[in-house]
Amino acid sequence: MEAITGNLDLWGQAILNTVWLFLGGGIIALILGTLIGAMRVSPVPIARAVGTGYVNLIRNTPLTLVFFFFVFGYPKLDLPDLSFMTLGIAALGIYTATYVAEVLRAGFNTVPVGQAEAARAVGLSFGQVMMLVIMPQAFRSVVPPMMSVFIALLKNTTVAAGFSIAELAALRATIADSNRPGSMMEILLWVALVFIVLVLGLSALQRHFENKWRIAR
Amino acid sequence: MTGASVLYDVPGPRAVLRNRILGVITVVVVLVVVGFIVYRFQATGQFDATRWNVFTYTLVWQSILRALWATVSAFLAAAVGSLILGFILAMGRLSEHAWLRQPVMVITELLRAVPVLVMMMIFFYGVNSIPGIPFKMTAYMAVVVGLVLYNGSVLAEALRAGIEALPKGQKEAGYAIGLRKSGVMTLILLPQAVRAMLPVIVAQLVVTLKDTALGFIITYPELLYYAKFLSSQQGRPLLQAGIVIGAIYIAMCLVLSAAANWLEIRTRRSPKLRNHVPFGGGYPRIHEGATVTEVIAAQKSTGRLDDR
Image (cartoon, rainbow over all chains, first blue to last red; front, side, top):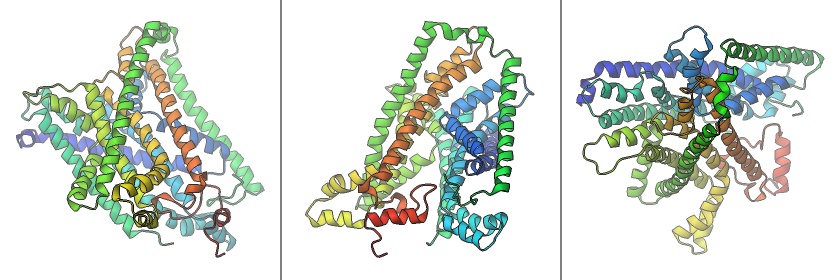
């Protein structure tokens, strides 16, 4: 217990940084991922090729290497100074965007073509087809896998520990280096517990949505 | 792709023009982004010969090969270990005995919820910091154990899903011809489930390969660790080392991903699995681009929808 009560300030800071990485990375991933996903299903062949290239390149690169390029590589290019935190958020966002794009693409593909064909046949415009017919159906099959992507993002924030960002997984080093109370094992087990609670919470939410929006066909 | 899609109709003259303009815009944007990065590389002298010089030494490439082996050996050990653990946990979760099933379920859920890196840290820093333990965990062992525990639990879930998605009649027929529980499992259920789940299993192995790079953070001397080391050598080739090592990672993952894709296509074409859709199915579109009619025609030929 001493490992927590003796280091309350550090725990607060670490959890805050983890949440920042999660939210920042999540927002970038959603925006960029939607763009890439749209490119991958667009009628423009070049846009499809670019989207596919991006997804294949980033998906086959370890996240640690993406962090390596952003946190260590970026400062070498003499661009405006950014904090490690900002660069870490960018790395997480760009990595997770590929998964968001794939989930969206798969979601659109679950909607039967006949649905859109029927909608166009009765004279709905592109916007109406999307808003009234396709989106409501695609949304249901997108939400559960999208939650999985965000659960993975939450767990991936720990990679930032190797890149001088003081989040939860870096707590062990911070506490051990500054002679604070608590052994490494204790702290790591507490960190694991925090993640278990967060991840199981998100999984419960995911199951709830899944049951609520199950598609009856 | 003939243009039939959920999202858009076969384009007419105006749409063709618009698509061309969008195509040009895409090319311009990509060129600007790539061009800017290349310009920054050029401006900060990243293309100078001195920065790439280290890669002309045989010794450096020998070290890269050693680091590559460190990555690959950790991956192979983790892959074998997680497959074994995956089978054990899947069998446990499917057990008829609640005293076995429930603890295994809790363990699988817990292992899946802990980030791999935290798991590796627990086995490296955590275990080694316990006073008076008789052995010492090496970084290699920590990487492998962390990967095995995490990926084993993920594979267990995939296998379980594969077995539960099989038609109930398979199991019943097995019992009816007098097989025991073990016989039904090993002779009837597992071969089908493994076959159907092979793409998922290989895809998970790609994840395992990528996650070996986490060993960098707990100082396991694998590829990325060596890239960091190179960046302190003459010429400080940090970005260059990143690019070379990155290319090696991407090549390895692409080979595994290609295997996964090939398996998936083969699985889809296999007549033995035509009637078996993992994950309980949903909408019966075989692949993107296929229409429902095509699917129905395909199913008709295998006698699934013979009432039409």
